[in-house]
Image (spheres, rainbow, N blue to C red):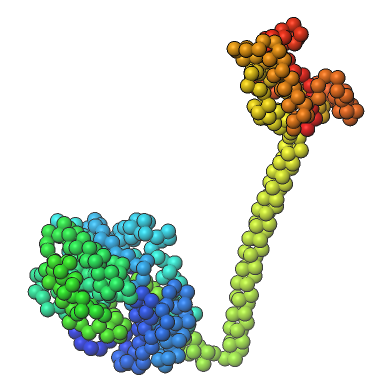
Length: 502
């Protein structure tokens, strides 16, 4: 929503057109409400415990109404929230609806890195550079704003205004005792954070920022951010900030320390930092400079509500009893049709969900069946076991050159060949001893290799006979060639054959 800035100085102690409203200041975790009736303060209430999250807005409004005796229907809110952001943008020259479209597009582009949802926004013009219009956008997540509006309606109230703290500080900027030509910086404690407005004392704003922390708990970090803000203003507007004013608790006590770190004349703001200041001052902000997040249509909701109530009452008083009954029946029929449409929509959603779950169940069953088939037909990794054990079983005098494992039914045939590693110190006798050691380790170790001549189990023979063609052997070194019998090369090589069953 576009709000045009007013450069008139605010004055007076009244509440302007907001003669009957509940004015709320929600700064960080501090929630305070003032009930205004006919321009006079009727009652005040502050939540005794820190408030976090917008989900409690309905409860807080109901407690405020009960504590203050408020009898109206409108609520205005000045809000300092961690998700509230300010961005300086430039747009092409435009007016009216075209300008609103340009600012809407700029707001959504600027909110992309800040929010995951669309943004609610308000804007007011700042001093332009080289004739290019510039606006300061106030950005706030739209779902949170809608939650606030819905929370007010649950409390039977209309939220007609949601204002950033900069709207109040802009009015306070006009009350500072400085020449209008000088650029000053006004920093206010807004519930643990610091809201900064830079501009002239006639209300012309150059920049606004929301900084984490304040001078009471993080003065060095705040001083660094303030110096960066001064540098940005100098770069953008080619002007220097002349003074720094602090508004809030502890401003007078920390002004000298902050001045030493910032390098600017620093003093407390002349405004009274009373807890009611925010809620009071926002009601005196001219509508053109209010920077309201609530759309014009939603602001008019109370008037529409009252108008509808008057028309309905007049119609009810002037209508005959039969017409009243007919109207009641019509309302009941409309409600039933709406309920029917709602049930149809729910039925369609449930049916779509049911089909989706059936498809997921079928897909899961197919995957489970595939996994079962793969797991059931997976052969045991006998070849890997044999090769792993062979690394420990082979004596250091021998080297294996051929290794073959072949499955035949439930039986695995193993054949390995090798030779003696040079130099051979004891000749054939040493080779035979090493081969005997290897054969003994294979026969007695975890492989339990059965050498030729050992009986094959009866069930294994049956399986071998009925197994059909044997699968392709597992060759871990290279293809086994026709090995020479051990007897013909007793001093050079060896061949060991056998079978095993996992």
